[in-house]
Image (cartoon, rainbow, N blue to C red):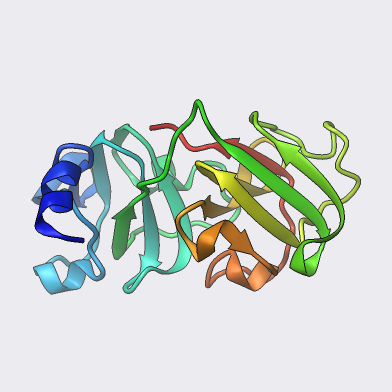
Length: 197
């Protein structure tokens, strides 16, 4: 990112992280990605205030492990960002802004097979249950993000593991489930929504 782009992005993204729950302990404001909070002399992140822009947090350094969507608001403890996840982690160690989020212009295509093969379904709206809208499987083997950014959930009702899909990552192409994230052990996605900016 050149210096001009950095200046333009500076006001679009702002997040403050705290080492303890309920906004206590050591804190630091971020406007750009952080590959490893341990490098900033933090032991962990236990609460967060997102003031501008959507972010994605990761369980481990270098954007590895479970992903958590962080939209504008307060996250006083880990349950607030892990939500209805069946997998809970009490801290996150890296995070980055989601730059292509555009709630009013988001489009994604789901495919029945890997490598964009088989039956497909285009979405422009949020779906708390993909099966209720006509998708015949609990699995989504490949995904193409046409515009914007999305979060897919392992279970209906926006529950379970979270997977972030962005137009400006992988050129918007996720050919198989292991490209969904480092924690992806299955292609099970049963609900999806657009990321709020």
